[in-house]
Amino acid sequence: MEKPRHRYHHGHLAESLLDAVDAIATQFGIEAVTLRACAKRVGVSPASAFRHYDDKRALLTAFAARAINQLADAMETARTQAQERGGDTLHAVGMAYVTFAIDKPAFFRAMWREETIYAGDPDYLAAAERLAGYLKEGFVNTLDDEDPRAFSPQELLAWSSVHGLAALFVDGPVAKERDRAQKLRLADAVLMQLGPAFSRRA
Amino acid sequence: MEKPRHRYHHGHLAESLLDAVDAIATQFGIEAVTLRACAKRVGVSPASAFRHYDDKRALLTAFAARAINQLADAMETARTQAQERGGDTLHAVGMAYVTFAIDKPAFFRAMWREETIYAGDPDYLAAAERLAGYLKEGFVNTLDDEDPRAFSPQELLAWSSVHGLAALFVDGPVAKERDRAQKLRLADAVLMQLGPAFSRRA
DNA sequence: AGCAAATGTAAACACCGTTCACATGCAATC
DNA sequence: GATTGCATGTGAACGGTGTTTACATTTGCT
Image (cartoon, rainbow over all chains, first blue to last red; front, side, top):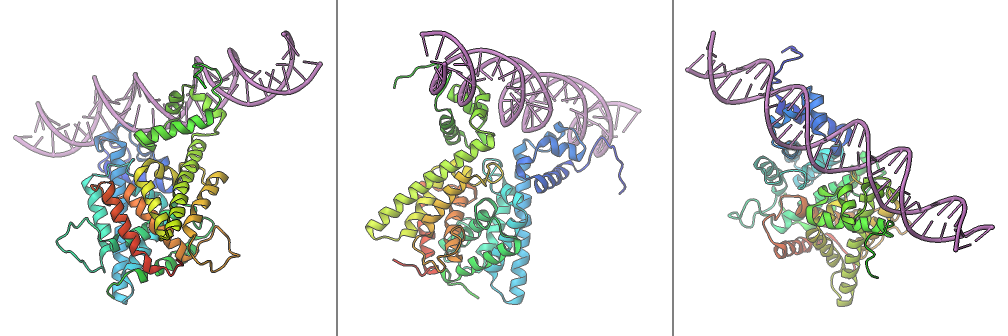
């Protein structure tokens, strides 16, 4: 497990490149993510990336899928904790969503960028569907036979509210000068307002 | 008003470049917008753009501000019509918002891109504030002395819902295969759900 | 051991944003 | 009307970008 510094074959290049995207996006933002910079950071030639990804776009797609799964993980944790404590599951999941966006804005931007990723990618779609699942929980399914990718107006309102709030924090002129805690308090207040719109189970 | 084909001085380069961004973004998406391509389309050398904009980013900022104002125009029209007809103003304004996003996705993307524009630009901020104003209308202001850029939880919920719905249509995996009319019907149903969350004036 | 497939490389390509010294046209002054 | 100064557009150059290609190295299989 030591570091054989200069192996010709890297071994885990595909994943390491994703880590490089992660690091650069975290530090300098998604716009600063460059194939060449990722390669350099991993200690590998620029061309080698193409052995693992068709495109820069394919790399960003994989990164987006990974980011969505990270967000979904956070939502899953929030749901489980809320269930144990008997709290409002939808609220908890929504707060996890907004919190992630506030803490990892570059990741949040990378996730939803049709022009920069291959939005039809199966892994990406699967991750998005998993994420949507946590938001749908707690709603009474009016039609169980329905396409699982479809949303009832209520479900879509829930996702829209949470997503819009996150997006406005990250890329909009909302609460720009407030710190993290203030944003979270504001998010909490906003999501509370959502309550009356739903007749949902405890 | 004829066309003096080859004047050395263009005359309205700054605005023409915005038109070029408009055209290219409409046809090929915002990611395809290139300073050189804009210049070529206007029939001018690439360097000339820098006499009018500090940056590519400054050009995109101006375009974003223009796009926001276009959206705000649409919202203003919707509001006025709804008022005349005695309809739900907030709903009408929200539908204008979502409709714009569906019809001009590249514009909608360009508007909210902190990493690609100068989000502190006064013109941009003014446009955003104007837009927010139309969404705030119809709410009872609890604190009139408050910072006009601040939002009550209700107001922010309204913006978030509408913005999130638009964003999910444009850059999310929602209603991807549906046509325009179907999306608009779905948007209508979603925004209807919002009603119970507000105790707002007629 | 030997060979094929997988993986990494170096060099080249066209395109990108940006800068700088220079060319051109416009408008105000004499 | 000529001169002069300023705003505006140009051409060539720079380093950086994604991507391709022909080639090098390593791994894994027989």
